[in-house]
Length: 203
Image (cartoon, rainbow, N blue to C red):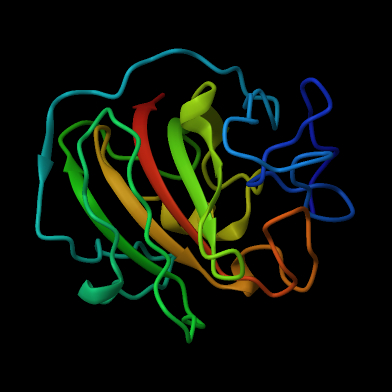
């Protein structure tokens, strides 16, 4: 576990890790409720880069510290359009027990590596809710240090290797998410998380 989770306006990000338990929005979790100045990050209004290429989605090559499988083609969300909020589709059960990752849009910019500060937009849905429960697109982009343990493990492992301008879907099992804890509305104990992450910036 890491240090105390930073908050803004009494609200916390779903992807941040608390010192005693994973934390989600304090109070209600809803679309448009996020203002992601969490985990010590400073939100910005940087727009998604336009130099992106839609591809036939496949799993990126895992780094030496990650292990994941591609999302089966039938379970992937549509690629959508770079710079616009994606549509996320929760696959039918059973949920995978391993992290699954596929690039929906391949970026052309710098590659995100451990130790980099990355700025992203994201949408979150869960297997238990069967729909989107959270989106940064209604507020500001979210920044965090990749590989520093400031977000759930599924993010630290799944975002590595993305290129700026890219869009990646992550299906995260409970072991790399919130485990047996329910951090807030829309996320059940032992829930599987479905994220679509757009990488805006790497520094």
